[in-house]
Length: 325
Image 1: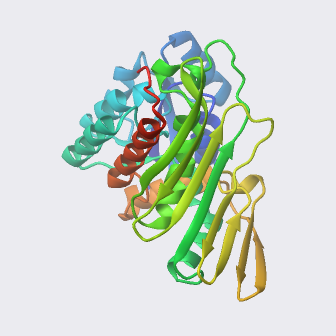
Image 2: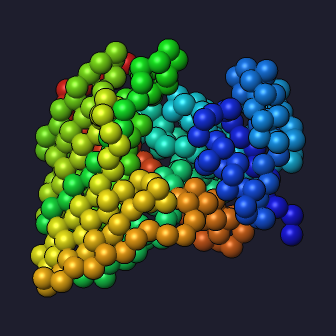
Image 3: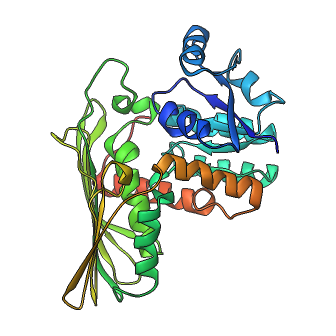
């Protein structure tokens, strides 16, 4: 069987660990080309990572006949136009998070995937890891009973370097867009329904939210909180759930392979399970293979991606923060 051939849009820092390294360990995939805004940078990136071909530009890459899957590693501003271009060219797309700048853009992207009948998967890599799947199975099996409270966080310091995309409003930067989107997605996933934003506040620096907090109310009675910050002094990514029968927590739901403990307490008895197995990115690429080769239903993208962007917009609206896009 010929490997699925990947073309990378953007010589991005995330690409080596998100796609290049996992593809080298997965015989179902091969990275064959890259394109960047600066052709010289693309050539240097290809040489560094042993990518055999460099496309002249983004348009040339998505039109190539020797590519089956486009990995869109561009800043959020480039997600809608180039994901749609790739889909229109008959390519499947793995698009980095956040999916788009707005919910309206997300709806357009999903519509394009429907027209092309090609997969469009959002790269929420945490979602594919076994420890997260295990936690979700516990919740869905009713071991906690009805969920009552939840809290998700993602905080890490991001330096305000020149050109740092996460501090650039026009590129789709901001704590909620880059980090807090994980919180939104995780809370939505574990709740299994869509929330109302009852309170939110943003601390704004350089035209983006440096930190955001929000309270969410789900129609199943779950009351949830999220917090995210790009100015935190240390990394933190906890997820905590409280149900009628007990509690469950993941100490690091975003990057379980870096160390994560699932703690389940029910009926006064506690159980701990350490994360193991492949990285979230390896699990993500394996899922893409399942979708493209074996007809699996994508766990992200589609209506899920639209709902996450709608929730992000609602948080900003409740906080009274108008982004400069």
